[in-house]
Amino acid sequence: MLAQLEVLSTTTGAYVFVVVLGLLWGSFANVCIYRWPPSDEFPDGRSVVAPGSHCFVCKRDICWYDNVPLLAYLWLRGRCRFCETQFSPRYLIVEALTGALFGVAWWFAIALGPMRESFDVTLVRFVVSAAFCFVMVVIAFIDLDHKLILNKITMPSVVVFYAATFLLPERRWSEGLIGIAIGYGLPWLVGEIYFRVTRREGLGLGDSMLLAVIGALLGWKGVVVSLFGGSVLGSVIGITALLVGRARQAPATEPASPPEPEDPTTPEGTDADDDDPGIMRMELPFGPFLAMGALIYLFAEPWIHLYFALFG
Image (cartoon, rainbow, N blue to C red; front, side):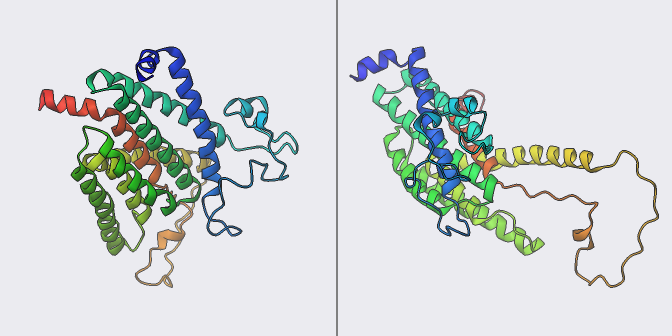
């Protein structure tokens, strides 16, 4: 059976099947992203099983043919069939992104297949990589929406991905433990120092738990690359968004006006700029950037190791 699957693994049909599988899991990811975060009505979040898919406005059940990943959003033009409520394009993005990541995970596993012991290791590698992609997508989009990284996702993921390393021949049991320790401990220490110095929250415990998940599978090197890559991506995207926001906020012409006199009643030790409307501040969740850094390392790790082996 495995020999027949190995023959078919490089065909176009295999890639189509994997991408469709990813689209289905992307649809489930949307359910998790929408239902798992806490709300006033559901402090512990909602079940992803019951009730079934329904419109959040008119509460009508969504028919199975209106729940086909990717295609249903397009033929309904992103609206509910019954009440015409506009759905967020995020549903389309999550499904397409998950499908694409599953396709990349399959290519990654197949491309390295000849260097591995057997095809069953290739299948295990794909399953682990695809599961990791799914978890990163769910965590990233929940953090974007709610600025929360939920323990109900990260804690089981640490256990599952550390256990998965025993199925991959290139992983060592000690690397996962060190990765978990550094992934959780280093951001906690940085965030604690930042808070002591600035009295503002920096990295939260959710980011620490996310890095523990990354370290459980990818080891301490994955943690370091995710932190560095996430910081670079966050800086570039954050600065770009800030500049675009300032450009939109600035009027075309503004008459010169004398500066406001300093308010002598401003309490000493407070930052008067906190209430200055001319200063833009932007709070970006760090989780999505850490997830992007982790996915880059997940797929680039063999080539990174090869580069350093060749060029020192």
